[in-house]
Length: 90
Image (tube, rainbow, N blue to C red; front, side):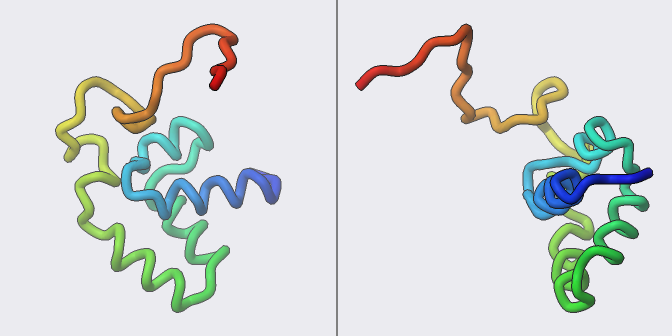
């Protein structure tokens, strides 16, 4: 699978985010959890990879099955819902 630099950056960003699950990364990019781990190992410096692994290992928020969230949401529950093409005015 060939990824653009932008896609690689986004995968790394999503992997570092606490609330983004591995399921969300797989849904968007087709990479399973072991593939994300291998991707991170390849794309990051060894010290950064170890820090990331220590941070996400066993973290319930990174695994959809362990989360207590309502439904299948990939966005924060506090995120503002925007409908239509409205532009907010001050």
